[in-house]
Amino acid sequence: MKWIHIASAGLAAAWLVQAGVASAQEQQWLQDRRYREGIGYRVGDLELHPGFAGEFGYDSNMFLRADNEHPTDVFRIRITPSLSLSTLGQQRRGQDAGQAPPSVNFRATVAGIYNEYIATKSNSPDDPSKFRNLGALGDFDLEINPQRPWGARLFGNLTRTIQPSNLSDTTAAYNRITAGAGGEVIWAPGGGLFDWRLGYNYLTTIFEEARYKSLNSGTHTLETRGRWRFLPRTAFMFDASQGFTRYSNPGAQTYLLNSDPLRTRIGLNGLVTDRVGFLAMVGWGSTFFNQGNTPRENYDGPIGQAQLTFYPTVAPTLTDTPREASLTLSQINLGYTRDFADSYFGAFYERDRGYLGVSYFFAGRVMTSLTAGVSRVHFPTLYFPAVAGAAAQPRSGAFNEARYDASLLAEYRFMDSLAVNTTLTYEQNNSKSIQYDPANPALVDNLSWKRFQGFLGLRWFM
Image 1 (tube, rainbow, N blue to C red):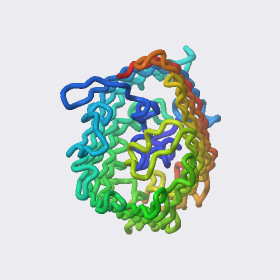
Image 2 (image 1 turned 45 degrees about the vertical axis):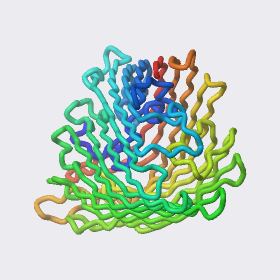
Image 3 (image 1 turned 180 degrees about the vertical axis):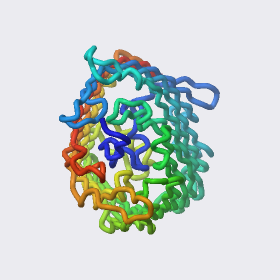
């Protein structure tokens, strides 16, 4: 087995970038309020939505190892209690078309995810059970003066992610806490034909094991975004952000450089017909890494997104808030994204991804959600940590990875608050082998891996 092995694909790229807080949790129904919540309970001017789920499943590659590194397959048990609290929705308020909207909207969610790992073979060299642990997530969102000319929004989130590394050692686990908070001021004159937002947020990632403390970081971000509806069903959109990422204690990992990433995009969002929508955003991004002990390699290029959406039912209008528009359960999306992010594997990575998404809710009982994607991930030159002030030595030249992902959630609801579901996911990373010990060129790390997971569960939700 390898030593610290920071080159592990599970830590290398998109899995741990600062932008992927929600994706750290695996249950799609937990991430998305459309699936998580039922009718709920009214308590005064608030709604309570408790839930509880139990799942049993199989994981073909718990440690994300290459085929020649002895993958470990396990049985898994997940127990997930959750609770959401919110101000009353429009249905309970009984709001008429001419009635003023509430002065405050609030929503908060907490959940725990207990993970149990059971070896499929009694003579397995690894002991998966010692990785049993409790993940968690929480978030809140407070809107002040919604749907008025001037308003504000405060938000925050916290996630504890449980992720073993490819070592069968709990002191090498990538367990981490990601926490963020921020706010924005909203200006929406003219009855919502135009809105402009200016905000700030802070996001920090803290690794729990001592050997990964050098990866702890914080990012301050100033951002602005806006929308102008110049046609009944079409809007011009723009967004821009300036980030400031700092590693709190990089120590010997001198290839980790602070950066000031800048992004800016413009585009259109609209409806071609009542059932067909489009989104097109294009812009530019740059990483602006600070000077350090390794040569500065920056991403400086185009970023953007293009997506076509088909709605089996009538699509939401542009006057709907993004949150309410996302609650349209049945839709088919076909799209492409290009973006970049800081990487614990080196300076940064850039990713091109094509994706397909299908979600359908039938007769109030059967829910299906399918997502699939193909990505090209590009890494610049990688370096070993510099030793005793010497120049950093290259670890690998620039290279590309091909990644494939697919997930299916299917749920049948016996009643409004009880459902049985199955979740199937497949992930594959086609990469290369790179040197991980500068003193021994013969020792290499294979970054390729593949993984299948399947769960069957029972869920109660209100």
